[in-house]
Length: 354
Ligand code: NAD
Image (cartoon, rainbow, N blue to C red; front, side):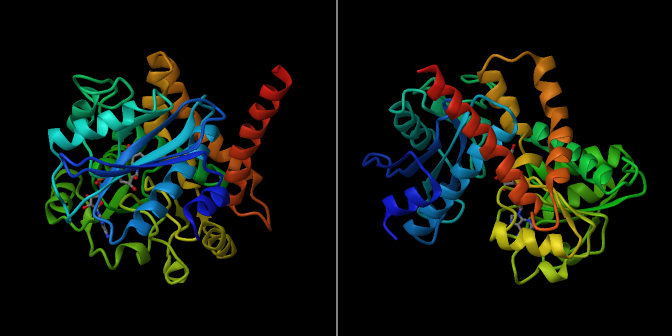
């Protein structure tokens, strides 16, 4: 399928490729929608096996950002960028980040870059030396690491899931399995243990799991076993596409609620199968909106109180979407409808205003 056809299929407004000869930077910015406002989305640095894979990733992630911002009630569109690394784990440096910053600047604020997998507040600050259109740094730009806020939002979505099932909204005595204990996953674990839960963790980094075992008395299992482990809540907080037709049958949880983007490989199909298996799936882009709410909210000038209220509001939004779920409508479909209805409403208001 041609790039334009792919854009038309997912409804993208703009996709730009960039190559910088001096630093070797290769990047793609995808702006999915600016109907609700300028579009904020993280920069993912990754060693993709092909350009096609990188394009697929940025198109899918940016579309998800539109739904995430819309469902969170933000006046923000959806976008994302990816940096195509020449090798696995190539460290980011100032020259590369500043080069990307110059590329981001060409969008004049239509695209606002932030952190994602492979980037740090330091990287964002390097970008901010070239453009004001970034969020999530500590010194040159604002906002800092959004992960603790993302984690808090995920826990709020877990509360809504318990409530929807008619279970006490209390983590004491519950077992939560967390796949990936990086920035988001370790904060999810911390909050849950503080609230009385027991956690089971897995990560490809032995250092990260050892830290969770020592600090939070976490049980460590292998990365092969984590998704099929018996638990109350399974929380994927590593990369996307971890639940697919090949492993849905192996899930042994009551609730699936994580911080990762695009948890389901084929959201329509997999969410329907999960629904049929009577497992409750809290839609990822609603559950993990806490970091976006924090950075976009700061960008839009919200006060600390409003930011916290909106993060707490993830519980109500999740509950609302779960209540929209019916026999024939999975929670993913309900969440997409919820987000798209808001975008359609704003579009209509704009037409009437002209
Ligand atoms: P991170 O890189 O800090 O953490 C990811 C962790 O997953 C790492 O510890 C890594 O070793 C581990 N991991 C990778 N592959 C694994 C595997 N196969 N099995 C087990 N562990 C594995 O990233 P993060 O910022 O914590 O983000 C995690 C996910 O949450 C990503 O999908 C990201 O897009 C999403 N997300 C993050 C934020 C945020 O605020 N950081 C916001 C929204 C969504």
